[in-house]
Length: 60
Image 1 (tube, rainbow, N blue to C red):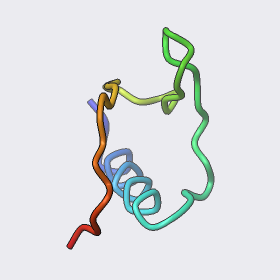
Image 2 (image 1 turned 180 degrees about the vertical axis):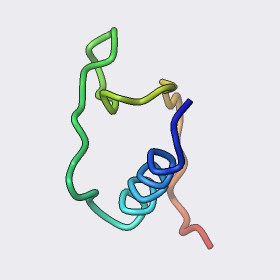
Image 3 (image 1 turned 180 degrees about the horizontal axis):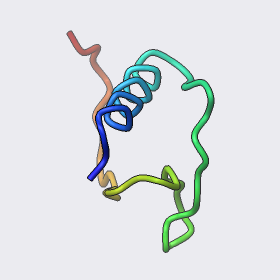
């Protein structure tokens, strides 16, 4: 189980990624399919495929 410092680091990484480029950039590795990258020390990750996207109108 991660300690409080690890969880704080995860929150900081998430916040940095939400507003721009995380610094430092975490080490990345390829997914088993080799199509995408994941954070190397992630305890859990999910992959999904977008089948359709309607971005014709601006979100509010």
